[in-house]
Length: 75
Image (cartoon, rainbow, N blue to C red; front, side, top):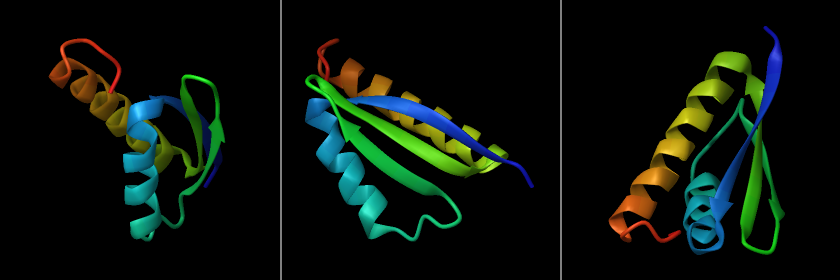
């Protein structure tokens, strides 16, 4: 099985919530790391390609939904 790495940008107001979820769950075989930036964080997910693709899609959808809940402002 081939590993892949995807990157998801998460706004500053949402990154702590994502880290809390990621640290409270057994995410293996998915590996992740966070690089904090000024306006948010880049989350790098590495592991089996299909799992990483699915994880990335869920996180992007979650970020968009949180943004829409806040009237278009980053969450």
